[in-house]
Image 1 (cartoon, one colour):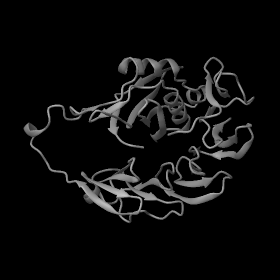
Image 2: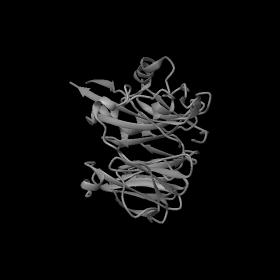
Image 3: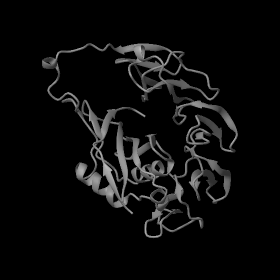
Image 4: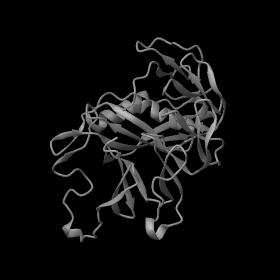
Length: 316
């Protein structure tokens, strides 16, 4: 069976949101078809070979030897047995989880104890005590025709703000950027909401000539050698796992990450994916990116959020 990897044009959003350095690095043996953990010199450290794996976060890594996921520590010992359809990386002692393909998302601690019951259709990592979660959008008149609406919760599963938003992103000043339909708001960690920008419909001839791209005082991050270099890096480094090919798993993975002020890559996460095996491989390769040329705004280097779809496609 042959397969193809198609890379789509990325979407960039300027944002302000660092990953800690990992003691062990996730590698892949393409020839023999397995993942393994190595030290900074590339020497294999743990004996076990995994069908799928994510990098270590807070001393723990999500791995799979079959089609379900569990968690190991840096000694390769199982901390949480393989029984989940998917588990996210641990952040602030918690990770989102999903027991089956059709179940909802909840949160567990580092011992596998359920902290927040599975209720959400979308769940993000905890950061500074909060996480963004989503449920089915039943307020399309107020929020627009999105599939989900979003809330911010704390570790007690309490909402930071009672009403839902059409979209939420993290800012760098202890606040969130929130949208209600097309109006932009700022929500701080105390739960105070303020309107930042009211959306005003404009005629086509009044739109900026470079609408949809960076304005004159902005520049987006850039991969070394540009988009062609980025595409070549992904083609040469991504691994379409044998398990995924044998099981006929394919589709598009939407990966979000942040390009830091020094060009380093952080906050890698999956926004949407057809299967965890593809998610973890897409994230592994993005984490292996070399440093980018950072974005700028008003002459200053800034963090920039980068959303990139990667399509895995099987063909007979």
